[in-house]
Length: 183
Image (cartoon, rainbow, N blue to C red; front, side, top):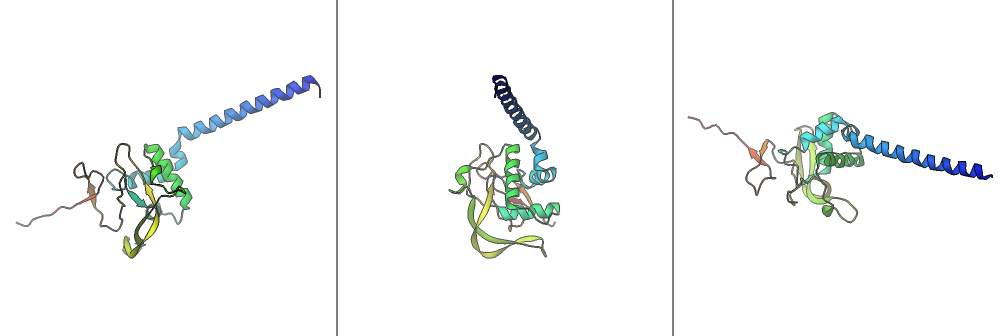
């Protein structure tokens, strides 16, 4: 091979490397500019409600299968892979400036806790305890500046309007009821 051909080959390799670098940068910019599109508007809208500050589901453990079932029921989805759902939750957390504390994960990177064995009852459209406990996969979305707690969100508790009461309980849900006293 002549020197001219060798130099041309080297220049081509440099050009190809530069093109690959630019493509990688552009692909990264597309993802950075529109993570909601990557996540999906339907999931984003669901997560906005499910993990709202008044939901009682931030700064606590949330059973993963409960969250998945609620998502499926909300959007009319028959199924979603756990890995896909977990990735969407991580993306949502990143968009919202929330974190999933690494110190809560086990040596394999899993977030699990022992909790009541629960089941969604389609007849009553509610969650029931089956009796006993089992180790379950969890979600934990942590807001900056708040304490990490051991609280586990229990979907079998009667739901209603939630409000925060006092600084020490600011992340614990409290059922608000209106009582009318007869005259």
